Every structure is written in structure tokens, then in C-alpha cells.
Image (tube, rainbow over all chains, first blue to last red; front, top):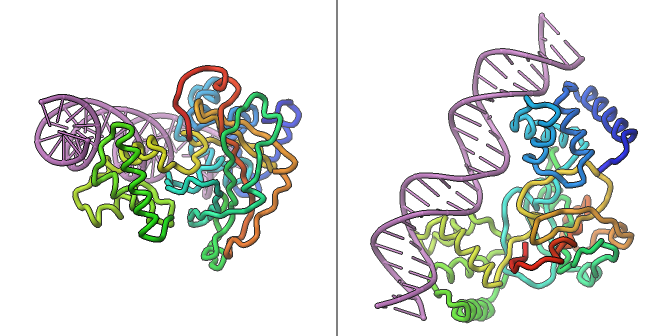
Length: 154
Length: 154
DNA sequence: ATATATGCAAAGCTTTTGCTGAAGA
DNA sequence: TCTTCAGCAAAAGCTTTGCATATAT
């Protein structure tokens, strides 16, 4: 996502700082995975990161990729893009509508909003032909917002 | 999603009609899974549907749930809510932005749009405390829009 | 030194597949 | 009857976990 070497360097320093602040080690693997993520335009999968990091570090394992991605998320320097909670979910409501997703309990609820309902695809998508728009409002559901327990972000 | 018996009945008739039109059998399992989906407010997972359908049909198998969900999607009476393509994907760009998702090849790309960028959470979410909004524009990417091959929808 | 992390292999899940008997049209 | 489907069990992913060794601080 960051093209130029300079800003990548800045991000890597940030990673190191956060590791130190959290009492986590700065390891070549963490640097390499984060760099690969920074350099990619592809929103890579764990497998793709594995392939790319392995080029410069043939000894790295897939398990380390998974553990490192978890660590990077804990450090707040990357995140997984939407899976709408943990599991696959289905619905029979095919009308245009949107979803709220609780980042703590995973509950998904429908909502409608006239502003969102009438959203049209943005222009300038570089050849992309839109067929629909889904909006996800993430946050805490009523039940979870009312109770303690600190661990969020999808 | 449909509360009253009447509209559920209508939907079930619609299912039967579509099965016949597609040369697919109308089976008790398909009826039961679709009914469970219609009656649920939970955006159920395959496992949850299995549990719920099994109450009235103890012999049903999990494999049938999966096959039936696939069939129902093919028939256009239900869909899976967003997994943003097939696989888990990560990114290091934590700035507010949104994604396009190609329903054919699964490619995910970023986009920004001032209208969407400034979206505020809708009111009236019944106690839900929003922390962010993600917009997914689904459709065909430039490459896929240019080529043949008929099988879409995420 | 001491705590933390890596790599490997094994285990755990979820999802898919092949096959045979059963059921729908 | 003839095709399609359900159920079972096995296979095939993908992800996590346990543990011994190696590394960071």
C-alpha cells in the first residue's frame, strides 16, 4: 500500500516502537511480514504473504505468518478486511439493506437507511462495473456496549 | 426474516416454482432449510441452520445443509452475506477507505470517495455503538468485465 | 539470563467430494 | 423409469496449537 521506500521505513520504525512498548520482540519475521503487507497492493491472503516473504526468507513457516498477522493486528498496525464476524452467514432477505456487525460478539443485524439505501456507486472505479453496494457499520451491539471486557476490532 | 406465516408460505411457493423452472427437485430438506432461513433473525451460519433444521428433521446431515445452501443461492432465493471474496485478506492501510470486490475473480481494490468517506453512522440502530463504516462495492473488475464466463454473485 | 518467538508436526475445524441407496418428477 | 438428491464417510482445505529449539532483550 505504501509505494515509496521512505514511508515504508517510517512504518517499520513505528512497528518497532510498538513492539517495544508492548514488550514484544522485534523479529526479522515480523519486519518481513509487515514490509510485505506494506508493499502489496493486493490485500494479500496469508498464503500469498507466505509466498512473498519466503522469497527473501526461505525458512519462514506458514504458522509464523498466521502468528505474525495476529501479532500485527494486536499491535494495531494492520487488520483483516471484512469477514463480517468469524463465520459464514446467510440470509434470505434480498432487498437492498445493510448490516451492523458487533466486533465483540459477532452478531449481525440488518438496518435500512434512506441515505445509504440510495447510495449510487462512486465514479472513477477504473473499469469496475458495480452491481451492488453493501454497507457495514461496525461497532458494539447494545448488549456488548453495556458490559465490560476489552477486546475489539474485527 | 419473514415473521408471519403468510409471507413465509408465499416464499416457499416461490421456491417451489423456481425449483420446477430449473428442473430441480422440490425436497423436504430444501423446504426446511429455506424455512429456517426465513424464520431466523440471526443471519445463521451453516452449523446454526443444521441445529435448527435438525429439530424437525433429525435425519438431515450437515453436508445436505451445505449443498442446499448452494442450491438456494443458485435459485436466487438466498445469499451469503459478505465475505469479501473467498479468502481472508489483510491490509496495512488503516485510513478510512472502502473496497471494490470482484464477484468473479475475487480481487479486492481500495477506493476513496468523499461522499462515502464522510458517511456518518445512521441513527436509530437500537443501542448499537458504531466505531466505523465499511462500504463494499461489488461487481466486476475491469479485467473480468471484459471477458466472457457466466457465474457471478458473491 | 529470561522471556518471547520460530518452525515443525500434529490436531481441529469447516467445507467439499464420491458414492450408494432413496426419493421426486 | 429416469434423473436428481440425501446421507454417509472420507478427503481436502485452512487455521490453530504444543512443544523443543533458537532468538531478542
